[in-house]
Length: 331
Image (cartoon, rainbow, N blue to C red):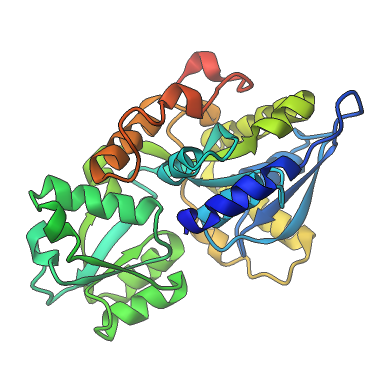
């Protein structure tokens, strides 16, 4: 998906949102949301941290790679995705910078790879020739799958025989139970409900491989940061405070706030999903980015041949400069 966007990025990056040199900075941030969920920037605005800057919702994203492509091409002012997808887009010369972590994996929230109870699949080698359902390619789930296979001793040729299949998240459980998929990547409320129904078991999850870690970041274009330094700083500061608020408040209080936000924005959404919220999974205090959260995927992409050795350096991909919790680092 990202490769297809390279030419679009090169053609449209110059149109990335920003104000003309010397004029007032924009006080409006266009973004994509998620159905039945509340993003940390939305929480920041509701808590009053973002003022006087306001958010302008333009629709809902279909995936992380799509969301950061929209930011890179100026359709939105910020977007968020898996860090490996951010690295790939930067390798494709997209002028973006990761500014704050916004999701991750821990004991409460993670991406699990599930099989039916009676499945013969027990280890990495058993996945050769099998279909693994996931929400999108080139992102978190595919990277974790290939890391699992690599650690299991499979050769690149054998890994190519494991087939990632794109399936809408709401259809993953059904595809697994009907035998259309051998493995399904489940997370959040969809995973919780599937496990409650029984008949499936976990093969592994991303925390098994990496421990607790932040997995995705919000990005801004370098052009936007240059033309709107104050607004960019406000966005990062406010989002960091919102993440910290969620990290330090009782789960029930966070869920109640999310429900209020969904009700107020009046997008004809169901608030049941946020009732399953357990954690944002963000490892760093206030979303502070740790170097290894990019270096891990840079190394993996180099080994996979997706980027050239030394083509992308972690220090050039992200910045914690505007995060007020930067001195505290990661938890």
